[in-house]
Structure formats: C-alpha cells, structure tokens
Length: 237
Image (cartoon, rainbow, N blue to C red; front, side, top):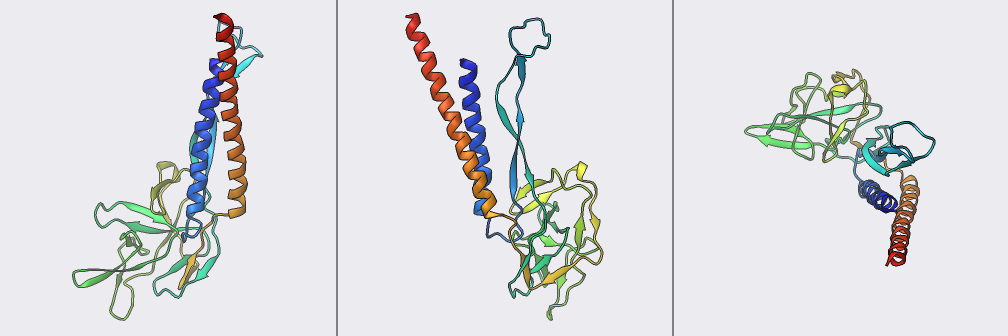
C-alpha cells in the first residue's frame, strides 16, 4: 500500500509539471515566433513481484512516472503584417542567429521583432533582448542613417532540431547532437511582418482537460491508499 501511495503522489506531482508547460504555452499565445512545448514522460523502475532471486516474472509493478523533458514544435506558422520597419518573418524553416553583446553567446530565435541600438556613433540591429542580429557572414548588422544595412540578415538551419535548449525569452541554444548551423541561402524572409505564435489553443485546452483528469485521479488514488492504510492500522490495534 505504501507503494501505491507514493506512486500516486508522484503521479500528481508530475501531472502538475505538465500543467505548468501547458500554462506557459497559453501565456505565450500572443508572443511572436513562439514555439509550443509538450511534456515527455518516462516510466520509472519496474520490479518483479513474488521473486527474490532476480529472475523475470509475469507479475510486475512500477513506481510511477517522471517528466523526462519537454519537446518543442518548430513548425513554421503564418506571418502577420505589422508595418514595423525592422520586423521580419521567416516563411519556412530556419532561425535568426543572435549574439550577446556582453557574453558573445550565440543563440537562435524565430522572433524577428528587431529594433536599433546605438553604441557610440553607430546603430546595430538587435532583438528584444538587446542581442545583435547577425548577417550571412555571422557579423553584427550595422544600420546607416538612411536605413541601409551592412549585410543581409542571416537565416540558419540545423540538421536536427530535437533537444535544442530553451534559453528563455524565446531563444534557443543548440546541443552537439543538433550539428553545426548552416546558412540557408535565399531564405524566404518577409519584412514588415512577424511570425505568429505556434500555439494551437484548441489542442492546448484538450491537453489541459486530460491533465486535470489525470491529476484528479492520482489524488483520488492517494486518498484511497491512505484510507486503506488507516483501516489496516485500525484492525491491528
């Protein structure tokens, strides 16, 4: 009974984590270029029942689940015209390459809401987080008085997108398994427009209902296990 109690309690905690992921998607439904995330679970250790020699038996019991990671859905979504002078939307696959002016860390984003940042006597094209937008040669883009840019905005792709780390503020950091970034030549860019959020509200509502029910069932199991243990202890006394 103790196993059922702790398995159910863990299930409730892990379903709460899934609800947090869904809540974050809902909160980002109006964020340009946002890519929705989904929770991925894995089973915890199973053990054989009525066996003490380590042999496999048809009777098994598990100890619950754990949220292993979150997956990001990078599918392109439709652009929306904004009229912003430095707004850009990538129509197909790819990312804008960004560089932190403080740490020189390279990150990637689909959000093309850019603006100008003056440093000394020159203006740089930056994103909402103040990171430099890099051109096709991976150099920061300078913007002149007449709006001319020192280079074309670079769009970069990866052979594998699975596992890219979310570094916050709608930016991503690749891992070794993602491979080296490559320049997507003749990438389809739309100016004065931004990519809409990839959140499907109807799908998220369905996931929320499913998760709430699983959470409720797990709590019911905790309650039932506690009542059974209370009854057993009462019989012993």
